[in-house]
Image (cartoon, one colour):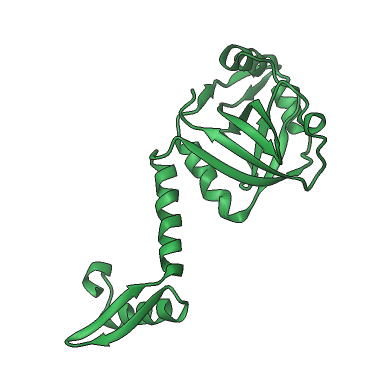
Amino acid sequence: MSKQLHVSQQSASRYLIELVEKGYLERRLAQGGQVVTIMNKGIAVLRKEFSEYGLIFGAQEKIEMRGTLETGLGEGGYYISKRGYMEQFESKLGWRPFEGTFNLRLNEDEVPKIEGMKAAEGILIEGFEQEGRTFGKAWLFKCVLVNGTKKVGKCAVISPKRTHYKRVIEVISPTYLRDEFGAKDGDSFVVRIDLGDV
């Protein structure tokens, strides 16, 4: 095993001991050596890794993220209202979005899904210049927003080229989603994103 990991025998042995202590592996002596078994906890970690790689390298077409609603800084509405963006939204989505974003803070374990989403094609919104400023590119991913038994299908996650928020996704829709759901900060939502719908 040390050869495959390109580490010393002592390091490989230490890694094994740590994984056994954390409950990922079980190790028992057998004739001529030892038998190492991956425990359920270890299998769960491997499945999660496999799923994340699948997202990043395009093995999945649909992903689901969970997060809670939070109030943004108002920047989303400012950018969306720009003519250079609005015209592209209308031509590429077939609808004019409400001038504001619906911000969801994702659970920590959902963050790799954002990277998986960004690795997908998406619908490109080109950057442009207006009023002496440069406005950057963004990508859209059509989605369905769900809260309890209510869902809204005419939505899209917008992913700007530059963003400061690693755990927040912004959703746009032709309707004012807070009113549509009767939602308040802290409410839980599921976002079902279709990576193949471009």
